[in-house]
Structure formats: structure tokens, C-alpha cells
Length: 178
Image 1 (cartoon, rainbow, N blue to C red):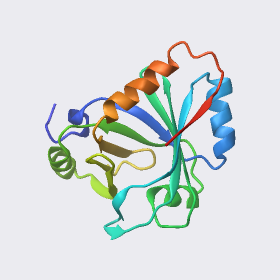
Image 2: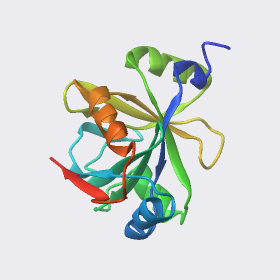
Image 3: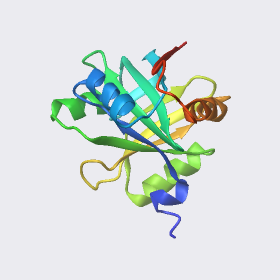
Image 4: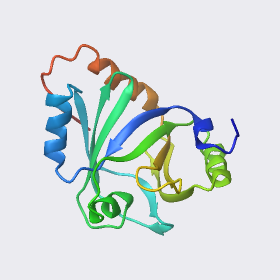
């Protein structure tokens, strides 16, 4: 496989959605699909956020749950700041918004994306020394890829969520975090 291919960065670990009806989507994932529990992160604070190269003040919340080893993320934006989430909703889109790949070396990941022709459309700094970029791979709807270098303890945090999902009995489907 060419080093310029996005897949060379690692396996997809997350499927993310930006639904028009957040509560209905959450109910679908927990009640119909049996995914959970979801962990809620309200009004996420990223630093040095840029959308298409310009500074952005995006106010968004997310819930994260696991379906086996795949993370399911639902996102809702609370303000009208330009973002990948607002653009998606403004276009009336539903379905998969992006997938996520975890990396240890963001500089190397950015280089792979550039060689593959993928364009960074949104980026920011994650608490604890992490960084996130969202790249448009040019393939049309559903080809946005999040590349995440977690902050300190991030992978362990995801592991805790994954373990909570194993044998989940449907109780307490949404658990608030920080």
C-alpha cells in the first residue's frame, strides 16, 4: 500500500453522525441498535480551532458509545459558527458525516494527507496535548476523515468507554462527563 494513502494511517475506529434530530438519533442508537452506554461531552472546548484556515468559535456537544470495538459518535452544534458540522446540516445531509483514525504522529499524518490530495478543512488542539484535523479526501459526501492524536490518557479514556459497553444492559443510556 502506498504511504500516500489515508488507510496507511491506521484502522477506522469511529463512525460519526451530525443528525438533524439529535435526540431521535440517540434513541435509535440506544433502543433500536442497542449501542451504549453513551458518554456525553457538553460544550466541548477545543483550542486554536480553524475552519477552512480561519479562526472559528464552534460550540458543540457530542455523545460517544461503542458498538463492539467501533466508536459511534453523535454531534450537535449549538451556535452558527462556520464549521464542518454546520455546513453538513445547512446542506440538509444525513448519514455518516466522518470516520476517525487515531494516530501518534500528527505531522506524519498531515504529510500523508497532503500527498494523498486530502485538504484540511477543520482543525484544533485537544486538551492534554492532543490535536485533531478533519480532511476532505475529495470523494464526495461521506469521505471526510477525522485524524486524532489524543491528549494524555485519551486512549485509556476510550478504553473505559469500550469496556462499559461490554455487557451493557440498557440502563443509564447517557452518562454525563466533565
